[in-house]
Length: 177
Image (tube, rainbow, N blue to C red; front, top):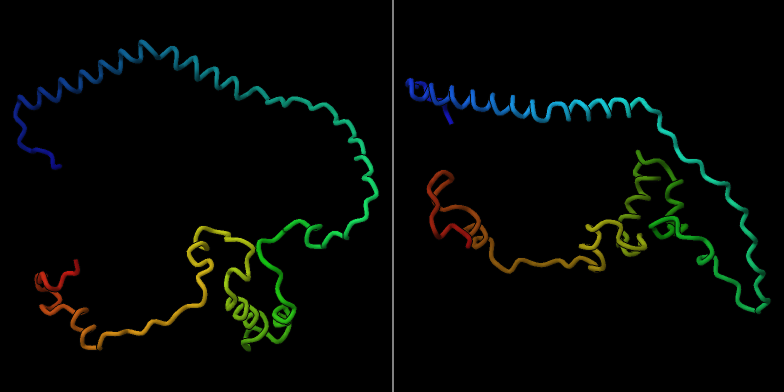
């Protein structure tokens, strides 16, 4: 909004009254609440200089050893159940891991070849569960299916390009509804 340059005395008096009214309101507020605000600011300032003292914790009592389990013949636990899951990925096959140590990336071997073979695996085979929400879009989709175009080349060209030129007004037939 632009400022009016042709102000007459009525408009000047109006803005003068508005300015004075706001100034009076601010002064009244300051007289009414100014002392409370200054007291709060002083209290905050003194509280900031007081050092923070943390409560002391009582010493922990030593834990009693768990009761000995009864001798029951059972199967040996599997190593997968003993170790907690520390990674969100499945372990890499030894043949794939061996690619890391063969050659250098500059010669399209080593790490470069390892990463390319690793990315060929589907995410379900690499990760235990979807890590991010974007993983859920591609999770368990299967291999990509190539779709062939059914229409002819001229049909695609005629439906893609405008018939009236780049800067012409749009024709209702050119708009996709």
